[in-house]
Length: 334
Ligand SMILES: [Zn+2]
Image (cartoon, protein in one colour):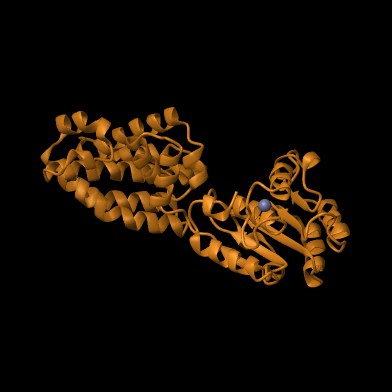
């Protein structure tokens, strides 16, 4: 698969293709950024490109080396001998020193078939202290024809001394437009495309692997929240509902839930302003929206839309969830 087939993060594609074209790919790279934005796919394409038989600055995806690399990243037994993926064993939390020692023992050998050896360390933040120190020794004396690619959602958990020896490529969330296009290419209906792109907050993998029934359930739940928040007699249920959830779930779902509630607010505003119903984010909720519209609801919807950006910013900064919800709530209900 060439880089152009991966949605998003165009800046990083450019950097890597430029480096490939000049045969100047750094020996150690750190691919960091939020989950689901394509870091592992980038690492895989880079591993292919470094040994591709037809292209200099990209992976053709179809030559024997590209095919074997792609196969091997799924199933090491059938792989390309110069590309190795290291990850924590399923029954272990950590990446262990033995695994990094294996890397160290072969990193200095000449490639067997290809031009370069490539080691991809997935969830590199799981390396324990021993494994990290062992890797550091390799990075201090970088092997000439080997490339070590660390992939992580949590770069701060990797030794500073390791990070400082890698070129860091910081991935961004995939834009809504790129996610929409990727979903359209998969043949998803337009209504689902728009709402999904909103919901996943730049997490492309989540958008591509979503269970639509589950999303429908979450939309229904968000609709209830929306009604409670902007139209209900007892808006404090909005708070109680979040308070009842476990912390981790809140963190994972809050952004998506806030997006869904915002999408209903935007639809309400659109309908009130006599906008084109084809622009609705939730066309399937239009009859309910028209039936339930109330005067008080409209003001609260506007206040919610004004306040929600602040909540997203707070989420990015890992602010305390309860505080965040309380602030949002007080800004909307007053
Ligand atoms: Zn190729």
